[in-house]
Amino acid sequence: NGREDGNESVQENVLSGFKTSSVLSDSAREKNIFIHGKVADQDAVVILEKTPIREDSLAELFSGSTLKLEMKNDIYSTYRLQAPPHLNEIKTTVVCPATEKHIKKYQRKESFLVEETEEDYKNITLPHIVKQSFSVQWVYNILEKKAEAERIVYEDPDPDVGFVLLPDFKWDQKQVDDLYLIAIAHQRDIKSLRDLTSEHVPLLQNIFQKGKEAILQRYNLPASKLRVYLHYQPSYYHLHVHFTKLGYDAPGCGVERAHLIADVIQNLQSNPQYYKTRTLYFPLRADDGLLSKFKEAGRL
Amino acid sequence: NGREDGNESVQENVLSGFKTSSVLSDSAREKNIFIHGKVADQDAVVILEKTPIREDSLAELFSGSTLKLEMKNDIYSTYRLQAPPHLNEIKTTVVCPATEKHIKKYQRKESFLVEETEEDYKNITLPHIVKQSFSVQWVYNILEKKAEAERIVYEDPDPDVGFVLLPDFKWDQKQVDDLYLIAIAHQRDIKSLRDLTSEHVPLLQNIFQKGKEAILQRYNLPASKLRVYLHYQPSYYHLHVHFTKLGYDAPGCGVERAHLIADVIQNLQSNPQYYKTRTLYFPLRADDGLLSKFKEAGRL
Image 1 (tube, rainbow over the protein chains, first blue to last red):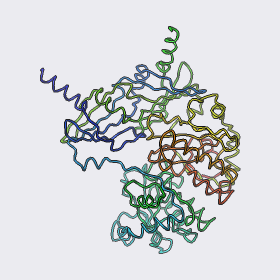
Image 2: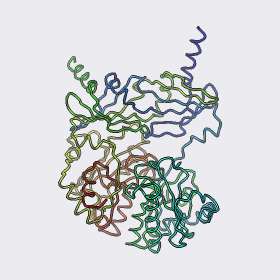
Image 3: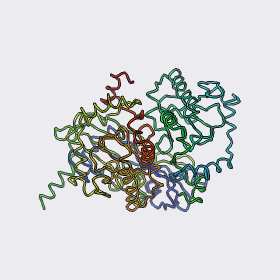
Image 4: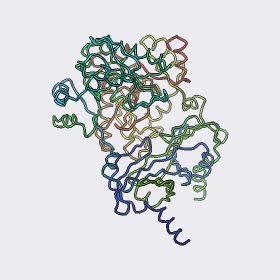
């Protein structure tokens, strides 16, 4: 009995001597944090995540907590609420012993917003893209039906304005709530938004229009439920367009990286050189080679 | 002294008798909940949101909490952690008395993407805004220092290009990871993006430049870590600009609603009437009166 008590108390305090080495990543939105540190001389990763607020605990939460007033303005007031611990638990996951691979897996890479003028594109970005010569063989495999042919949702085979529409890998296609499709242009000489001029408006309009029609037909989702956009920088330099469901916070749909195709079409119609001449803004991760080039050029 | 104690205890228990009528919406991902109910016979909306986990509280969190083992498998184990209440607060916002409009505002509703041409703005949106005459008294209270004066981070008092910079309600200011500030223009006659012309470029540039400087000074966060943008439609019709941390998925930073201020400035510089004439796209919730107007006009 004495031994059991001893064990239980050890179990309940396994993290009491935890020494934090570094925070690998955290999310203020999701209220979680990934920490690397030591549990009794062994490397460990500890993940803390606050739990969702449960409707069935509200009455007890309101009656059993302490409120500290922070601010009051007109009908609005804010408080810090201190709740009984059992109503406000933190989900804790421990990986121990953790290897280097575990630690890297949970490490977040910081991003920096880069400002790219027309000159920066010519002097920094374009040479980097050309030198890297990222392979897009997997894109050509799709366009030539050498791979993923059975995944194609729709195709317009026209060599100038045609495209292939297929589900993005991130989408498991189990529900339309997180619908995510990609339209890949048959034209092979458009690297990104920067290459677009008014001559590409028919291509963009065709992808926009026929993509929406295909999604309505296959998934019964009207255009008013879709967010249709290009990325800049894209993750591969062959023109493609993202179709995601409105209301689904798809990764990469933020204003710092996404460009609505409807805006792109309008901008090119009123200024054929819009994307050739405009200063564009985009985030780059700390480990992106292009970021080093911008730093070397004194542009960050 | 006794009276002070009494006041404090009343203040600390304003929600102890809160009666929940319904959960308006909640998010398991963001750990928040929006509740409609009664505070002493008055309609109220209460918003609870768990706070981000702070690195500087980790040592005390690990040493001062109780762990309950849930599962153990190989190198992985999970626990429920019960923390001291002061290390695990819940941010609480109370809107009281709340009108039908407030309750609707927080109710989860499907969204639809609306296409608004120049004519649609004149014939549908503008008459709707004018007719609703949403009160922005709380904005004027801030600009006149009648409320929230102590929350102001920076002010440029110039009547033409000046503004007040202060933290958004959504941000608890405990960590910069989810930094969210709002710059509110002193000018009172600019309803939204649609009203902007090239004459407002100095105002926008001033907000952009001085806002970035103030954030660097106060929070040590450089411009390359910021996402600075306007909403269209905005949630209130008095010009304001959002400053959020890059990498923080702030609500409303998606391409369908946000417009980078740097893009807005460039667009106005090359075309003074850009936002007066352009077709704009934005999501509207199912219960938004403006959506009904677009439907009645056969525009959805």
